[in-house]
Image: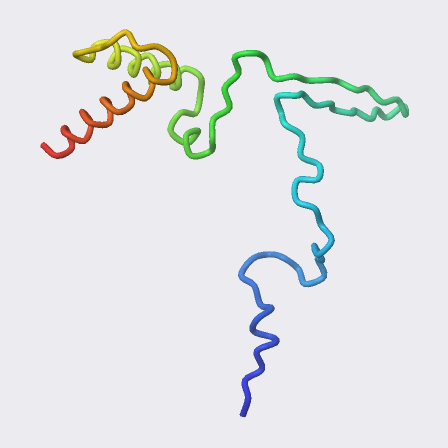
Length: 120
């Protein structure tokens, strides 16, 4: 007896209903980078519509969700970065390399010192 695989192949563990059809969908069709700003349309009961425009302020830093779990607010982010700045500035053999190369050298030396402390 043959096993009916048509039914088992369409069973999903998620909440997608079978009537949803995304064959003609375009991924990211309505995506707009947040840094360009966005508008909110507020429809009032009297029939008028108010449009408010928002822009991300200069200096705003967007955290990825995995980082946000560990740093839930500005104070925790600033404390961690100040500690990192102090550690980097106290590193022996600190050179006066600027730009991208400086970041690379600093990151390599921090990684090396971290791996040595983990081995000990």
